[in-house]
Length: 104
Length: 375
Image (cartoon, rainbow over all chains, first blue to last red; front, side, top):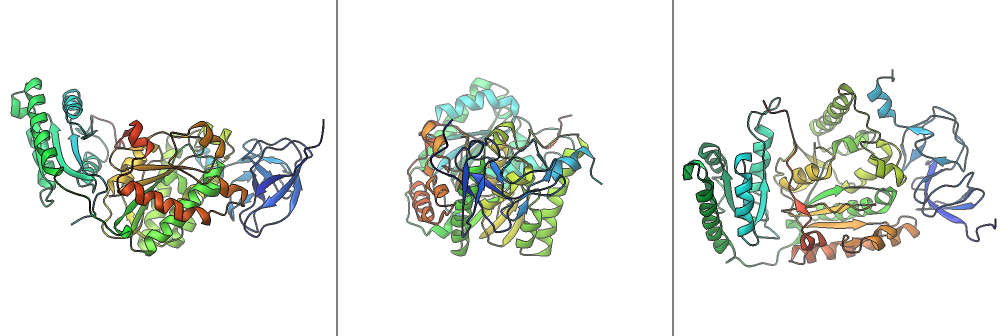
């Protein structure tokens, strides 16, 4: 295995966003540069993540609501570490919960 | 008078399922005509025939329609539609099976003769130069991926902001794709009544899903959306509503209802592309802007539909599918300002007669939404 020569890029839209969208696929351990309107920073991919999927920018505990473009996109099913892939395995809709009648 | 058209079609409007086979042949015999059919429309339970009839009426009054040939089994039903259209000056004619003593062959001949005369009348008209504020644009997305929400839909938002500021009009719908964002849409409502209508529409469809045990996951977002990187309905909705830009929402429309006057309208409608697009176009949009991430070939039959993607891989895979690309915006951190003028130029080209790939390849139809079971 050789390290990827270039950091991948991920788009963060709003300052308070806790997830960004990768515009290249990444491998575990690969550096990711954050781009977007006035957004800067970096994160290391904790696992392989496909292109256009989401990467966590900060740690979240189960039940927290990851934010994209300033709006919550669902509820974390499990703890999510910074650098982790955020997808349907660890994120569920607040509305699907209501549709199933399990919401209070 | 209503909005000017960017096309000038004879609409062959078939409004009974009994006549559909003959009506298809009639339209095929009339070169350049546009065929729209409603095979259902009798004895509909629940909300009844009203929403269907209203949508058909809106389609008959569409700006890109120059004349209307109504085809139906029943004379009374066809005449009722013509009466509703009587204030409109466009030439219209109805042919029914009642007129031909149930003879489908005679019906075919009568339909072709009437349609030929109508086309001869409307093709005498010529294009005129008009300001772009005369445009109304329908905003649609289908087979979205994360690039849609990051760049393609925000591009539509900026174009629409400019059109609305200049006195034009636009309409967006896909009510389930307001879930999680309805508060932001309500904040943009021009009146408390519109805000309430937006909230009620979202809640009605959410309850519809819950009461019928429908899980939105896998449905909306669908499996292709999820495989491409979208996660929840609210994740998809954030990208979807970006199409509507930032202008105040000055009208709320029911499915297929026509927008009178300028401004930005929210339409309560289904999210499935064929039904959604027909409802939006029926509102009076001469042109549709349609974004896609993975590719979605469906276009409106009455409104030239400009296909737009921000996904470079999809564009390379489907070169005769997309009319406009803004994929370079992703590398700029989703800054789409540089693409706004280019898309407006493309709209002007298409409005002036250049054809979209959807028009060239004939991937068009109109599909009126369903409102209830037939008794």
